[in-house]
Amino acid sequence: MDGSPSSRQGSVTKHGDVLQIKVPLPFPLRWVNSYLLPGESGWTLIDPGLRTEAAEAVWASALAELGLGYSDIDRIVLTHHHPDHYGLAGWFQERTGAPVLMSRSGLEQTRLLWGDGQPMTQRMLALFRREGMPEELAQQMEEHMQGFVASVSPQPKVTVVEAGERVRLGREEYEAIETPGHAAGHLCFYRAETAVMFCGDHVLPQISPNVSYLPGGIDENPLASYLASLEAIRRYEVRLAFPGHREPFGHLQQRADELIAHHAERLEAMRSKLAEPATAYHVCRATFGERLSLHQLRFALSETIAHLIWLREAGKLTVNAREGLVYYRQA
Image (cartoon, rainbow, N blue to C red):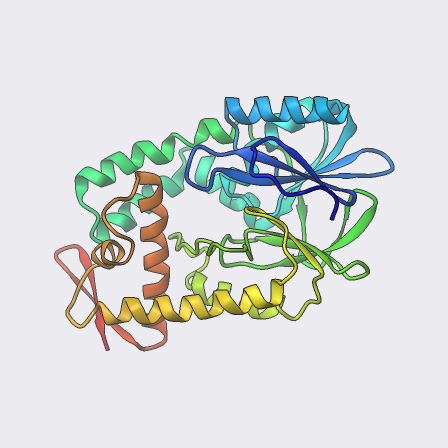
């Protein structure tokens, strides 16, 4: 690797031909990693970040530092649809004319989340109410979720990437590997010749990627999908992994094992809290605490539900509905 890692947002760090740009986020993750790779006809941009004024300013500064214009970017590639990765894709497409590549499932999610009528918002709110969220918080959550539309607008015209497809990133071709769990249709990009992987948020160093349940038949057991994806990805020989958050790292197989163990511990911890019937909201607060922002609560509750679904499907919990609420208990 060339250059030393820096936590300074907007700084450009070189890792051989790969340039890492830290695009700021207005929540505790602090930044998302975007990557630029030089190619024969232009640069590939991976995961441009959430659209905010601060992020736009960082990109203007980074491109000026590199002596690049928007016209130098010839393709935009997304590992997944979450707004901190997808948000600036349409903004960049307007300025570059470049195609935006992502998975079919990811494209479908953007339409549910931020398309006409934002149907996922009402699905999520109905789910949260059934799982025990107080009405006052549910009303605040609706406004919070609607607030993300500006951070992903304008939305891009997407070119779909299929699992197993060879995708050019810069000068080289990479295999697109579908790794659902953290996000439906999440893609990692792997080049066997160099043992390099762009792993998005599938495997992160130091922190555990969120695994959330979304209603509507998208993935009825996302934690099972995530664990299976970790088992699959750990079979790849990876010398250097470029993640969506934190710094590039070289121990992907070990980290995948650590994440599998982490979820086994989390599953048992949640099961142990259900000697008596309780809602997912109660388990969420008992697990993650009371001092959560709305943003954090949304993902903490969705992750709690994903774990309880896994436990239910494994026969470790019973589930009963009473007075419009869902209650879980040890089997």
